[in-house]
Amino acid sequence: MIRWTLRDGTYELELGRDPCNEIGTTVLGELERFLDQVDTENASALIIHSTVRGGFSAGADLRELYNGFMDVPDKEQEPRLREFIDRIHSVMDRLDMLPLTTIGVVHGICFGGGFELALTCDILIAEKSARFAFPELRLGIVPGFGGIPRLRRDVSNAVVRDLLLTGRSINAKKAVTCGLVSQMVPVGAGLRAARNTAEQANKFDPESRRSCKAFMKPLPTEQLEEEKELFVRLALRPVLQAALKKFVESDDPRPYLP
Amino acid sequence: MSASFDRLSQLCAKRYSVDASIIKPEGDVFETLKIDSFQAAELMSELEMEFDVEIPDYELQDIKTFGALAGAIDARL
Image 1: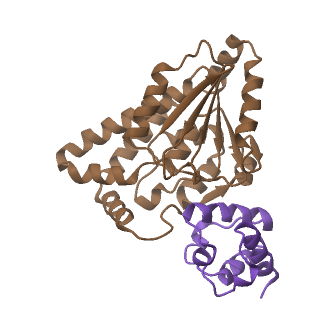
Image 2: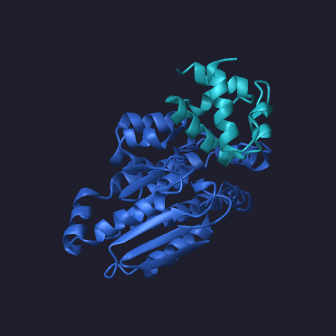
Image 3: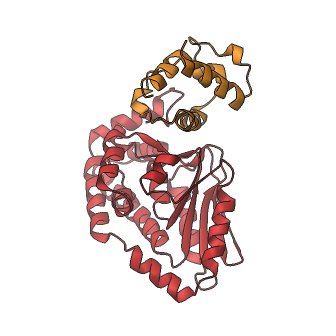
């Protein structure tokens, strides 16, 4: 469940879907609902944080993705997949370009699609428990929610390759070192740090703040389109379906570890 | 056992409120601490920061016991 409040010019968007904010059509619909009503004239900042114990988000809802594949005849798979990917890219792009200072607060798991959601934020604050990863290659695909161009926008290509080609997770300290995260704070202190950051953003002239963001954070439109095509091409192969089947049927107690 | 094992067992005992004596080199990490995959990820962050090391996940995939985990940490010190 996603909830939001607007107080003193700051939206707080709470991700609260058990077990770990898996992103499927439900979460997507709720994010769309938020974006449709967000009042950017009377707000300066947006904080995105998770209220579930496991972390920020474990990524795409793989069970829904698997069931979606199973129910759809072969010839309908590509249009259905494209429809979903277009929809999720639209949500990520809208979040990315919001004329608010957006602050992501990450604790625990921030993997795959969840990492892609975090990467839409202007500023990331990580609690010491945070771990970031792109484990998609384990499923025979690449990140498909716009994560590759967004990560490339923020950190060096070497870091992007390391994360993508090994699927390994990195901790908050490493994320600070490589320039992905602005502040590392103790466990439980992320929201407070984000509120302080939002309060600072609220002091600035709105036009200057919006213009600065637009200038410093352009949308990597061409690369996003390329990533979409790459994702669809790879996702339509039997490799993904086999990997999803293995994941869904697995009784491994460590399904979220790459 | 290595010095890393002693520090590892003390950290786990404190973090998960268990008696350090139940943490044995041959003990299964998940079963002994009764943790799930999310807590395991948090534990990895804590261990990496405590020992000031980086341990890639793929080096830990087959590790089940505290002794093996301490060995993986030692290999990175």
